[in-house]
Image (tube, rainbow, N blue to C red; front, side):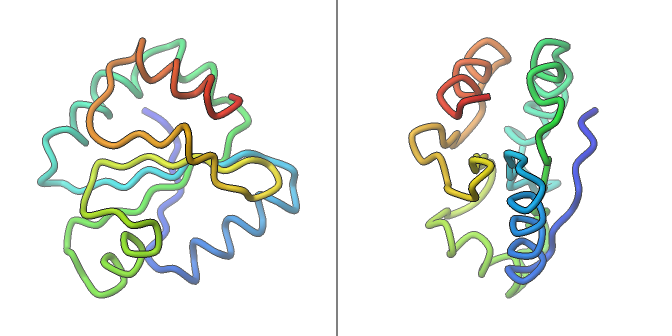
Length: 121
């Protein structure tokens, strides 16, 4: 299991991104919901993969749990133009989203490793 730090609002996300940038660390932001089958598969199959975990060492792992679809949840998704989970976004140590590496929907470990490479991880 990956050690995600939960963010519940745009303000919390901005603070976490600013801290990661100050620390010179890349960020992976995972949009998750309990009712999202693909999210559960990503956690069970992809994030549990030893190679995936190894490649994410040193990366700040943030997770927005949008299960309740609250106003804050919707604001987080709208900020990035997402309609729902799963969605995984990557940010460089300079705080710039690596749009070419966005993951929308389920990816197995092998495909996700390619996405990590696109994100420079």
